[in-house]
Length: 312
Image 1 (tube, rainbow, N blue to C red):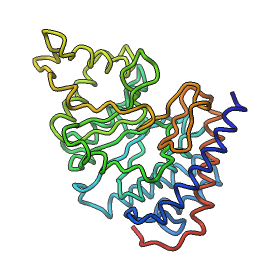
Image 2: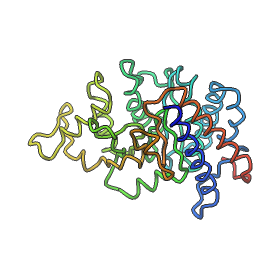
Image 3: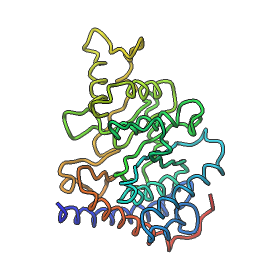
Image 4: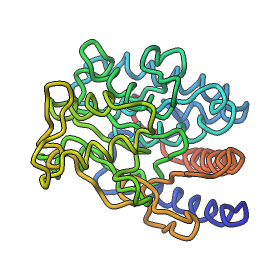
């Protein structure tokens, strides 16, 4: 497995470098070019001091960006969560890459942890916390309550094509309020490693109904049951309290596996150079740390020679 992942890592780094160069030279420029001279890029130095230093740097930069931006109505919020164990292993490297991508598109980003997630942190199954922190952001008074939408990214997922444009995806399917990729496992309807939700009544209703499910099952199993229960083939729509979701299948866009996720399995065999994200599902923390730290190094090396860009 480590040998195959080493090949995958090399292919991924080539793809990452190519997408970075393409982003710098594209006719339709991102809002801000990624550079080591400002914003997220200033954390390139911190990555050499370990994951804790990188995590602290990232959270500080992201807080300052949100303060400068103030009004969030034009923004898409990006959210990830990881506990102390993942912080010490690989998560800050992956989220550094995601923060660089988010910055180029003008997205606001928050990295949640056990303390900041508060009551939305699900102790029985940490995987449910993703739905909780998305609701935390969007509910009245939340940090992204006025955003256009929010996107969740797993701690072991990195956007490797900086051309991935969430605003364009939302605009291309105005009927949809939630976007996820189909899961490779036939037991599950979707993979929740990357979730995009529009900040509208239907987007919030889907997240609230999902969160209301039994947390004794994993979140993907719960969504699959929610999807099946709202099948048009059934005479009775699924009930959440007194509310039904007969529109669920019209408002949730289930995309191909590689659209917002990695097509697997095995991941190394199905990885292609046009992949948008790399989701290292089911591999060891050691492999994740090796791949994501190499990605952070490659991104910083490429950015070091990039022209100075307008400061955020």
